[in-house]
Length: 83
Image (cartoon, rainbow, N blue to C red):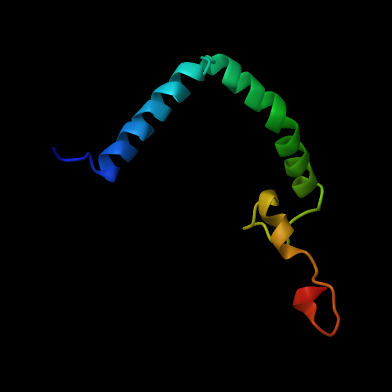
């Protein structure tokens, strides 16, 4: 008789682990997930957007207020990239 190969044994173990993982998971509906994401991330996004808007008027009318961050003054020093 031929002994089973290690690859087939490995695949059987992976399939069993997959079934165990699916069986131990709980179902969460999409509305609950959306509510949790809104509660978790909404204040962060609102705060960052208000910070961008509060930086002032953009340099020209062609650039919207959201892009005002890219026109800040870079600090001067010996190495301007690392200040």
